[in-house]
Length: 353
Image 1 (cartoon, helix red, strand yellow):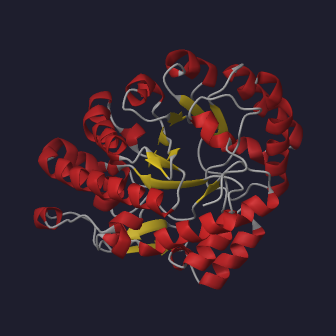
Image 2 (cartoon, rainbow, N blue to C red; image 1 turned 30 degrees about the horizontal axis):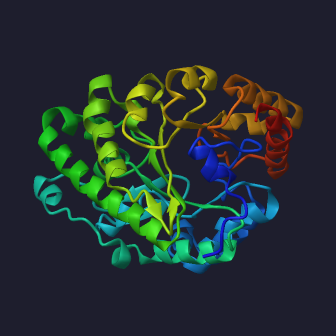
C-alpha cells in the first residue's frame, strides 16, 4: 500500500506534532450533499447503498472530492452487525432503522451468535478495500462500529428514537440476559473492527451513541466495561503502522476520566463538553476529537468561523486535537457552510501548533 501523503489525522490521534489541526466530520458522506442523494437514488435505498461496495465507495469519496478533509470514513451503518446476526434490519421511510426480529425472548438471546465478518459482512470489507485503493494514500481511512451497548439498544428495542424502556427494564430485571447480549456484541465488534483494519482501515472508531442514557453505575457496568473489552482486543498495528482508536460516547461528559482509562488513543466529545476543560481533565492521556455543535453549520459563515475559532482557542496550543462535530452533520446543512468551517479551521489552527 502507498505511504500516506497526509498523515495529520494519525499524528494528532497519537498526540504527535502536526502543522495544523486536522478535520473530518461525522456523517460527512450524507444527505446534505446533492451528489450523495443522487447515488442513493441509484442504489434504491439506504441499505442497498450500504451493501453495494462500488456505490458505498463512491459516496465515501464524494466529500473528499468537494472538501479538503484530512480523512475518509467508510460509508456504512452501525447496525450491520445485528443485521448479520439475523435480526432483519430495514429502514422505514422517515422513521429510521427498525428490526423485524428484535430480541425479546430468552431463547432468542441464548441463540445469538457472533457473525463471521469475512462472510456475513464481506460487503463492508470490500468497500474498505476499494476505498483504500481509490484513496491511493492521499488521506487515512477510518473504520467504525457501534459500541456493544448501543447495538444492544437497537437489538432489544427494535428501533431508534425510543425511550429505552425495554432495554432498561431488561438491565434491571434480567441483567444476566443483557450481559449475554453485550458479551456477544463485544466479541462481534472486536472481530469486525479487526477485519476492517486487515482490509485497510488505518484508524477505528467506536460509536457509543446511547451510553449517555444510562445512570452512572449502569454506564460503567453495561456500556464502558464492554467498550473496554473491544479496545483491549483491537489490533494496535497493521502494515508496520500504529492503528489509533477513538471512542465517542454521546452524553458521556461526566465520565471522561473513566473512558480515557480504557486504553483508547482518543475520545470524541459531544458539544455539551467544554474542550478546554476536557483537555485539563484527560488531555495528558488521550487525544480529543470534537466538538462543534452541528447546528452551528446552519448559521452564516461568519458565525461558523467564530464558533470554530472559539473551540480552537479553548483547546489551546499543542497537538492532540482533531476538529470534528459533536455529533453527525445535519442533512439540512448547506454544503458551502462546510467549506466555511474547513477554511476557518485551516486558517486559524496553524497558530496553535
